Amino acid sequence: MPRLTRVNYTPRVLGFGATFVAISWLTLERGWSFWNLPVAALYFLVYPHLVYWYDYWRRSTVSSERRAMMFDGLVLGAWCAHIHFSGWISFTLLAAVILNNTMTGGIRQCALALVYFASGIALVALLSEIAWSPEAPLGINVLTMVSLQLYIFSIAWVFYIQKTRLVGTKKNAEQKNVIFSAMLELSDLNDQVESFESLVAAALDVLQRLYPDQSFGFVLKDPREHDELYFSVFTPDLDEEQQTILKRRLARIREHLPQGYFLNTTDQHTGSFVFPLRERFDRFQGLLLIQGATLPEEERQALQLLIKQLGTAVANKLLTLELKAAAERDALTGIYNRGHLESELAEAQNRLKVDANDHFSVILIDLIGLKPVNDQYGHAAGDELIRFVADALKGICRDQDQVFRYGGDEFVILCRSEGESGAAALMQRIDRQVKQKNISLTTDDGTLVETPIQMSVGLASSDQVPPEDVLKLADERMYADKERWYRERQRYR
Image (cartoon, rainbow, N blue to C red; front, side, top):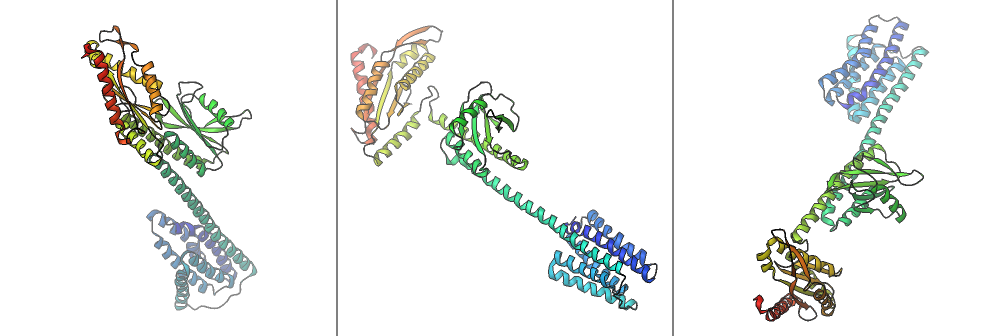
């Protein structure tokens, strides 16, 4: 059904009903023909409902209601002439035609309706003699004036309701646009930030800009673990004490958390709402905390969309980091692989171009005797030896050092921002703590055998040779060390 039909229905019913009463009263007052009453009842009382239900069942377009409004102008003009232009009744009918058509169709439609109104008068003039008798009893005039005011009020009220709905629709659309923009911003974060921590912090910043009166936090926890969080980030407006309280309460949450769970955060029973992310991140559950004034229902519904998008963004970032780690890591030892070494070396060389004092060093290590271990005790024992050496090297390295598996039995340690003297101290620790250390290996038949760790080591630094030749020089020195080792132990050849 056209909106115009719904808008006109109530004013038409009320106005036509009041007009029927006035015309019936005037008919009885002046002793006109009794047939005025059924004809007036048919048009003023029955016709408005027929128009409404016709449009409802036929699902008519707006043009059908405009045709009905032109028909109203024609018939109302005819009635004005028929009742001898009774003052306030005729004025009310003319005012209704002008008001209704101008508000719905503008000046052009109003002019057309007035043409139909004049045509109705002319039609009555052709069919019968008309007279000019604007006088009417006081009661009819009062009734008509009151009816006109009610008609104007009903028109104004209907349009006020429409305006309120339009404003609400506009506001809702603007809110949806803001939500949509925030969702796009959350989805783009995965490509804009490098680390998982940066992504979560940026996502909370997006939420806080959207809801500035709220504070936010995000945690990852294992629901099976009590009093422990795997990861947590909060917006800066929460101080350290508040964060400590929130972490303690969030750590106690168990599995099957309902949506919008209320969390007591202080002894005064003020609190926050916690929303679980539906995505599961390995064994961890993500929880979004919102602290502040309770959000209205419609905003909480919108927030659910953002929470879903946040969960997707977090899951995608974790997957991206997992894939990146898999591409950068050696599957056997978990340390960085050769591909990542090449990118780190390129970065170290670029830093040196920017800062001539930002030197780097490389320690190249070759594990001697891996093949005999594989041949005598099995490849499981050889893998165990490689893993032990990788763990041992990681254990003695500093924070700025990185350990890589360069090949089958070769390892590289990249000492960032470190010249030859500092890297030499690390190589001495390798000699003391790793070389010649006896370890137990499990053979294929399950027995334990002891074997020493034998290795050759080469060190080079960018303060000795051009940066692109550092790895090559370390390789040469490592092979020289290996030759010395074999010369001293001819039986191994």
